[in-house]
Amino acid sequence: MNFILKYINQLFTPKFKPSEEDLSVLEHISKETVHDQNIEVQKEDEVSSNLKFLLLIYDELEAERKKALLNKYGSFEIDFTESSTYYELINEPHRRRISFLCFMIQLVKKEIEEAPHFNTLFISKLFNAVLNTRLNLSEQNIVDFFLLSNSNELAYFHIHTDILLEKIKTYSNENEISKKLIALIRKKVFVNLYGSSYETTTYKKASRILTNWKFRAYKIPFLLLPDYFGNKVNAILVNSEKQKAINLSEILQLLSSPKKEAIYTKKVTTLIIGIGVESFTSLTIEILKLASEFKPKLRSTAYWSSTEKKHIKTTSYIGMFEENLIIVSELLKTLKREALVQNISSDIVAKIAKRSYSLKDNTRLRKGTATLGNLCLDLLAYDLGCEGKEKLKELYNETTYKRVKKRINTVVKTLQKNGEETFLK
Image (cartoon, rainbow, N blue to C red; front, side):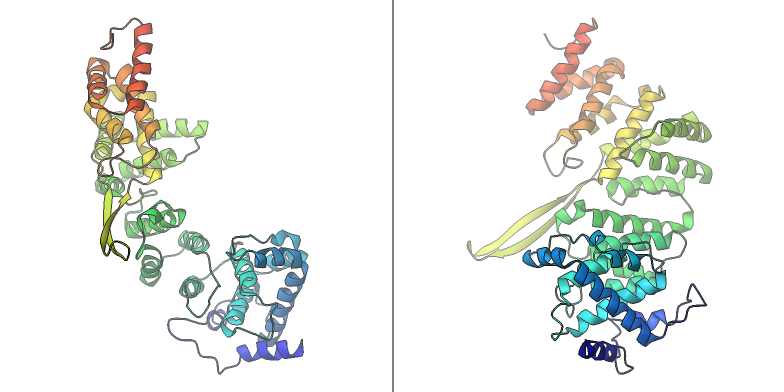
């Protein structure tokens, strides 16, 4: 144990000078305000305390640790709730937990071969578990962790980007985010992403942070995520009269949630009255028209195929954010619920239906949008009069998709049962 303590103490001697790109978090902790001014912990005592926490947690989780080590991909999650010392640690003051995080980073950076029980995989998982607790991180803390998250010198040590983005979101609720941190998010999250990455939670979280930062001066409570549709709707919001923009953005925020509560309906109706029914209707129709004109992103990339001895070109499809698609669907439902749907052109509804069912990357809204398509077919059949039924007939004759014809058949049979004439014999 003595040689370990001696080695750990050497990590925090003045001779250690971090590079500009890999800042020492400990250096910044000493500059921050301590939440409890009555507690001043000496650095050596802190090191000893952190080491004690680590060793006890390690020993208490021996069985969990062995399971993780047996999994060469590191996908096994260690159950830290099995350790009483871990509970003690995460109930420590914010500053102490941040100190512990920094201690683990320094430990991994020095690669202590004499202490094989300091396994990098275990430390990485413990680090992320502690980081994921409620912590009052400074922006510098977040920047430091971001810089270390993909550091080559910390092999096999991974700081989860999703957790860091959550910390930024929490921090931004009460603080202004600097351009440096925004640039770091762009560099770490958005550079060299493949198409599939645009479907991830990480990309959505980063997009939300950047969108809120971009429009922060407008003081609008909710902006849409930045795809073609979202950017166009955000332009409507920032160019509308202030109170109308605020009310409309609050409506869109309520509608964006996958889970709806009964109270939301009453709130939406109240906000519509605040905007004015006519204004709300015209703004909603304008927004739905933008959805019908949605332009997906098609990213082309090429790679050299050693088998075929030539460059192979591939195209990545990037569709509408799921959150934005939910807004489109809920706006249509809101128009129906508020008895305003007859004001929308059946042509717009038909276009949204077509693009919901389409399997072509250059026209479809996103993958898995049949539910929205079904909603549009119902509106055309039951709510948009003769013009809607005519569009339904056009869709039936144009489509080559069996599931769309089957759905229209079902709708038409319902109309026939109600005694209405239809285009089907």
